[in-house]
Image 1 (cartoon, one colour):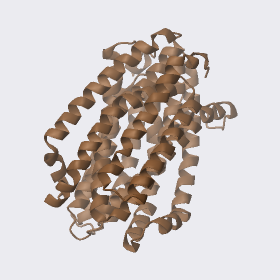
Image 2 (cartoon, rainbow, N blue to C red; image 1 turned 60 degrees about the vertical axis):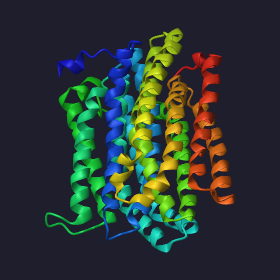
Image 3 (tube, rainbow, N blue to C red; image 1 turned 90 degrees about the vertical axis):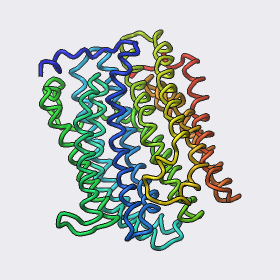
Image 4 (cartoon, helix red, strand yellow; image 1 turned 45 degrees about the horizontal axis):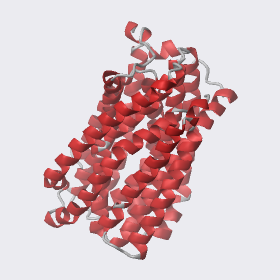
Length: 453
């Protein structure tokens, strides 16, 4: 407990400090992605349902929409907490966190209602295969109940990252993963006396796993004295001042991340028109982005927290040095990952148990995706710097511009000209470049130095 009490809340601009924050975050991001990929591996080997792996692509991206909304709330709250940490105002951190949780629970309730009312109708308008529609809706109406647990878990991550204590994320993520893997096997295939639930078994396993991750990280925070130090949940009343501050920071990010994943959902729904194989390949490519891009996303979260913290220390002149260090690390890791994936693609693609035809169809798409991961490695860091500076409206406008360009490209290539899906996945190149260029111009302009949060 003493360790938590004496933790220094101000960060230093060194590679060691960057890695100290980023590595635990990368593990925390990797674990949920491993949950997705574990679901898909088990479903790929589940011979009683040939639709399962294909439908998992649609349902996985749909749930990611709501997860991304929570991630936007998490990022906004994280920037605020990091700013208060940089200012050495720990008494404000607990107040912000409590309001963030209340907001998160309200959003989760809205997500559950939408999934039961609007989603079946919208899917019916776009999905052509009635069996795919039935399975997708049935799965999601189970899976969505994990949303409240996911949001609280994400916000606890914001607290730990924002206060330079990201190492404590590991316990919750490991607990979540072990629970998900074990229950996936038991509930999908029906072992140890449990019924064979197939595709829906993966949904139930994921909900229980998210509750487990949330509960374990709650125990860790309490055990380490972090709850007591920051006065978490001492006042559960609605605070107009703090909720308004969180909304002003997080609302643009919530919309930003939501429309980002909605555009991906749009891509997957159009890909469904290309057939079962195209949908399976695209689902696996989503897993590649998630699993092998986790370190890049960790550097993005680190950028958000460290930029905000450094500004809170009134060291704005050091922000560019910080960004250069993070970009070098992020791009270096991405280069290594992309080389390995291109040298040994069959080793990864074969784990889904789909045969040689699947591997042949996936290989050209994999080449496109790895190039996109290189672009992502520096683009997301620069965009996160804008977020960390406090001007989340600018972040939203940049994202909106990129999404519009992305959707136009996807529609023309995948639907209007009906080109092979490798050309559809080149939309990722356009997307990341459209994020990088405006973010770079904004940070170089220096206008972020005038923003106060």
